[in-house]
Length: 247
Image (cartoon, rainbow, N blue to C red; front, side, top):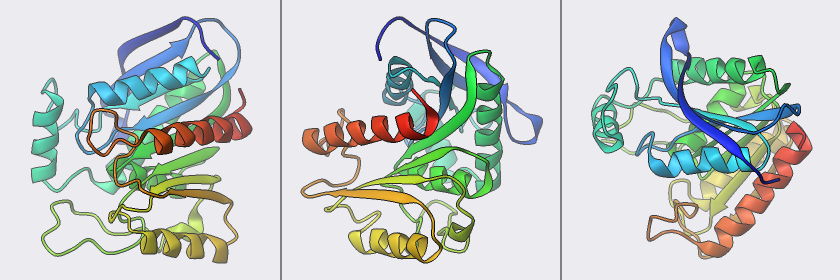
């Protein structure tokens, strides 16, 4: 779906009743449609993330990305905000879940909402997408190479995170996972562990791993960008959300 869209910065409800900055993009028109919460990667609330939000609007969804670093560095440049948050150990899991819950509620309150909301994240956001999907009533979740959904962070890892193994039996919506065979975070072994846990718990999921692709293969501004993997990945995301969110 393509056409005119609107994009703007808004304030949405976040964890603990906080107001959080967010980037919202919507198609023109009043047709009922699903919503997508985009979780930004560790580099923050940046131009590349906002382009992803607009892409979902072009596909026919109301899409919003909360600025997870807003409380820590309001108004700061994305790289400065990311550095400050990384130095503090990252975004706490509880706060992340609360911010995604607020973003989902915001989307469902829009007059165009069909009440279905999906979540997607890249890199650290991939793990956070799965985290949110283990706690919240969402309709679809996408994990793009999220590190430490399984596996153990090494000693000295700058973020205060653990894996999600104990939470995975609580995964609520169907999960689409997109990974690179050359990635180490997550490694192919960690992806297989995730697949085994979801299978053992009868969770609906669909995984695709791309030969020759490493971490961040969706990012056109990085040397790791892989055209074939990113193109196929976007086609799979489009089909997955069409099935589970409508549109």
